[in-house]
Length: 177
Image (tube, rainbow, N blue to C red; front, side, top):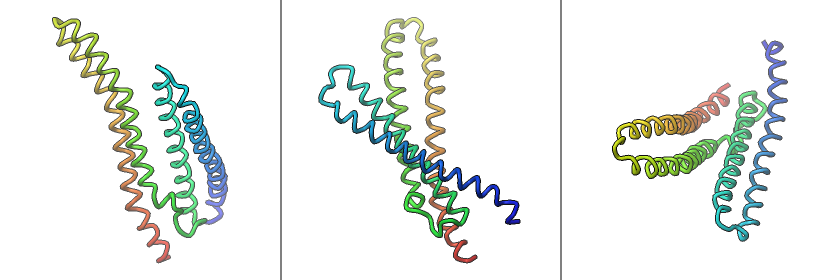
């Protein structure tokens, strides 16, 4: 049985190495973006604030994605029995997943809020005779924008709850073996 899984183990080890490099690169990239935005903060005028907010959110996305990649690498190494106990990031991955869910809510609110406000101000206020048509359009647009966001948030929170429950069970089963 060991000989049939050996090629897969080698591939997973290579992917773990690649994952470490990619994860740290994302974290460093996100940090550089945050540092660059902080350095230019004093020179912002007018529309630059919106650019800074979206750049900051992109940096947060890079950092959280890098942390998730590193946690995935730690999980693979833990399952392959290369690490005797889960690393610090893997033990606390539920926090990273919860932060990612919060990030998605903030980012989604920033994308959805202005759209909804502009839509209501421009269309519904200017044409009260066709309120039903605009209302249907607003509801359909809201559902198509909001449903994927809620689904992603629930997936991240579900994975956080599952990993928080499963990791202690895996640690206990390793001590019994």
